[in-house]
Length: 462
View 1 (cartoon, one colour):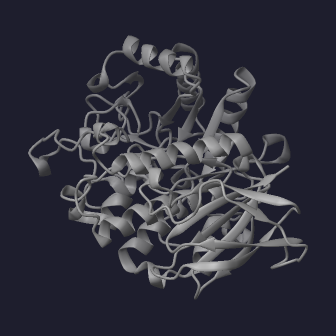
View 2: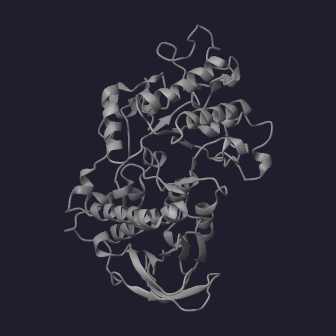
View 3: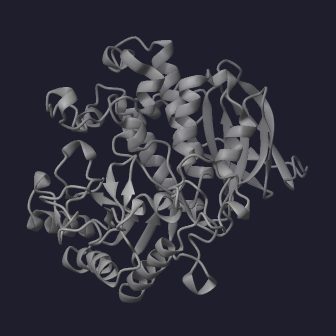
């Protein structure tokens, strides 16, 4: 979340009043530096959510009317106002605006040692209508016309050029829902220069499915399209849940799946209800499918790794300025008597396997099976084979799946394993002999047992 100083707490940091100050609500500057140093000591990169797409319209404590006019830093006409966000919009043609924003980026890189930025509201910046009121079908006329704000694009190119020149290892991420071509290609190719874009359609699709459909009715072609629909040779960050879903007024994925039963049946000593059983199984599968197929990087929204049960809410007039939901209950994952530990252990194993096999750095996965009635999806990426059976009741013995190599495969991840809260229906470490038989456009194939609501990863045995 954005941490630049903001007067209105419920804006979550996105109505910035002081761009060079970190919010005093979270501590002082030295404490932030200590946090970043500690993260670096653990081998972690720290990315700042930077808001250069707009600014608070406050005049007493913000940039608005800094010199007494509407045109200082912002467009002095209707272009300078974002009616939906109730905020001011920068005039990127002004030298002082460019100096202000670029120095702002360099300040956080060099003073606080941040490793990069997630640029908020890029879609709003690069279109005169802020991307509102129309869809983006992917055709080039949607992106290269009079509706594109070339001044904003020039600023973003300049920002990426400056950052990557001064600090070559910096990571820049764009929050864009439109799919602007070349957003994540180098500037010397005519691109805008970002390293990654957020795959924002993925969490939206999961929440849409959980809200509107029984999992028996999920459209596998639609799900496949959402997971793989991204610009070739442009890196995408996949994620299953975002702050938009987890804020008050909506629910986390875990809460959509299990709702109020999470309050009474997440103890390992309590009865495993059908709702909790289904929720645990699908929560693991949703994350693994997103991780394996959705992009070239994976982002976990805080608490999703263990199925946090509740929403986020910040003190505001609507909740009597309460801090009660302005937190994450990490103790839930650490409590051995609660089922949250199963989801957390699965997340740990999933990430360790990716580090071992490196599918996020490989070419996009090849989907060989997406069987609507069986509810089975199979794909291979980086030499490992992902197998998903989303069917609520049907388990499949001797189910043939295509694989990319001959020899043997071994089971390296089973979402149904006992340590992940499953029913242990498959023997750990099971090996599969490959048949010299092509299947679904893969050169070889093998037979597997896939229990219902289970995901498997098979790795080739050298």
